[in-house]
Length: 136
Image (cartoon, rainbow, N blue to C red; front, side, top):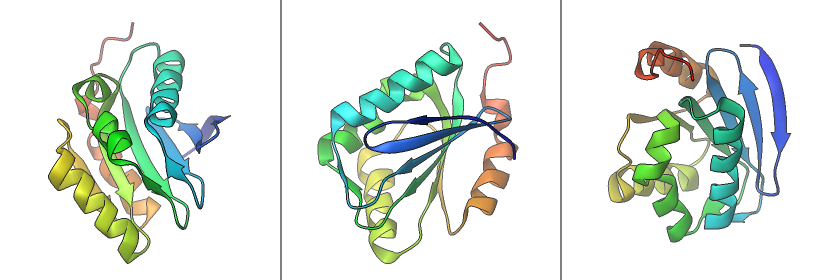
């Protein structure tokens, strides 16, 4: 999948890929706050002009989201911007955090966990139909 461009934020790197896929990688050793999740949403909205994206999320070692950041990431508002999430889990701590997000926060969109980026991208491509076809 080809990278169209990259946006660097304090908490994460956002790579805009073809096929409406955005790979957000949260940087290592970081406790992600709600304002940092909001900054990511602001970039999504600006870059895609309100059109939904398919989001692949990965985390650096020692990184997690606060409870408030997880709540914002799973909110109704986030589902206006994100059609589906593929979360890449590399270790047990990421698996636990992702399971809390899925089971406790219950985002209102399809979400799956994957052991690697290749499988995550494959699943996201299969879910491209979730994005409204009419471009703004």
